[in-house]
Image (cartoon, rainbow, N blue to C red; front, side, top):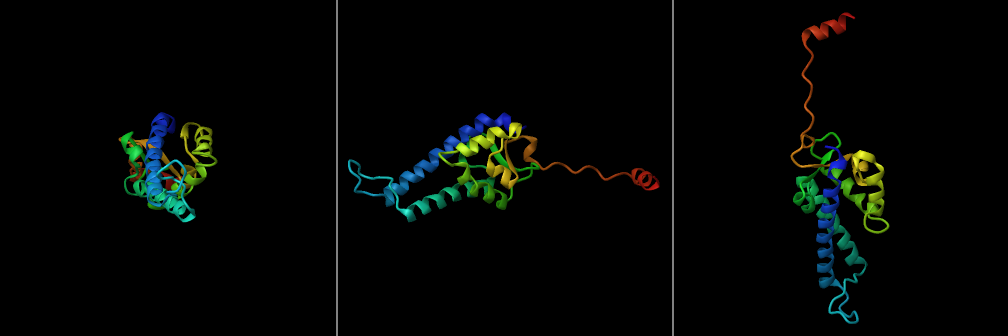
Length: 165
């Protein structure tokens, strides 16, 4: 199944994951935010260290879930999985690269760069993080979840005929 078959589900999964990250931001704002904001009991105005904590927790959410199961919560709900380019399970290093580049994909405002690369890659539908990490997103339960099987070894006749040429 190529990337164009899962486009709508990828967008839906991104929206679910964005909602989770937004809830994380609200939680951090409640814990560490500016409580003197005019007209509000709590503000999501975070200081520099709080912002770094938010970015670190956001990265850990995406990397941790994809490294352990190949799925964020959004991908799990919508039946998607991150795999290596060859269809095998994506390594922890690949998911780390994929999610470090996610911050570039988010530029300038929430996935603008990622959306451009996503639609510019044709049927592969890869964002920059997928290209850098050599990963792709597929529907769960497809053959792409399994690594491709190795061809059978050549028969003795095939070996002899290739040597005799």
